[in-house]
Image (cartoon, rainbow, N blue to C red):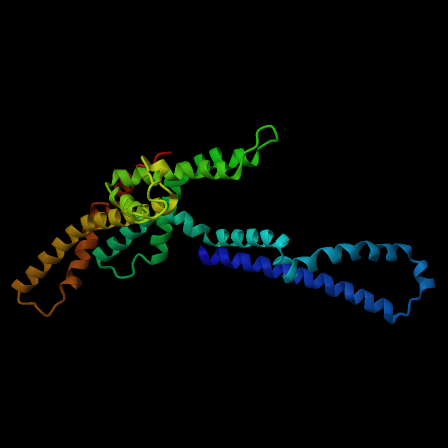
Length: 307
């Protein structure tokens, strides 16, 4: 997703540069053709439409494309603000998939599915594309109510604002982030990993004797926790929870491996790899108990998303 977003941005930039270059080349070719034909001032008066067209397009061409590609103007105090906004916009667009992954349950899903594949011992089956796609679709299903709430409470009022009821960008951002903040804080509390939040808060606490130490007040609830603390705390919580679920999935398959290994040793077949014999039994057991349904159901129950 990250590569696809970056590729789309570069393609748009390349198309813009090629289009502006083609416009300049076409105008230069027309001027060269007129000069080669030796059209004088007397003959130009007979073609007022063509002269007026060139006069109308010349100012637009002068004030349009060259100004966008002028490095000195872009780095001037007047144009630096627009340049920074464009840079930040491209950065956000390229990092949008990563930002969405950091604030959702995708981390838990993909880690659990990866550990389940290792527990089965099927090497690269199911392939990474299948596990990633399944994790993405489950993430979309779980996060859809939360994203819809964030859109309705934050983005819709900002896009439909009027002069009588203006909405600032800061207010729209806070309302958009509020449902995601609540989701992440609820998951941290449900999994009992609030210690990660306090660890990052203690790291950001001003040192004793520093200028801000006297005025520092620790947050009283998750609404006051900054995103710079909540995001890494949530990711650590998801990784820990995913490993705990993966450990529970590993146990029955380890028992099967131990039983098969004991049987082979008792039969004197010590040179035969136990994994080769236990793999069909693990797959059979996983299919008979409908393991995929149980695993996905357990993951969904562990999320408890608040819509």
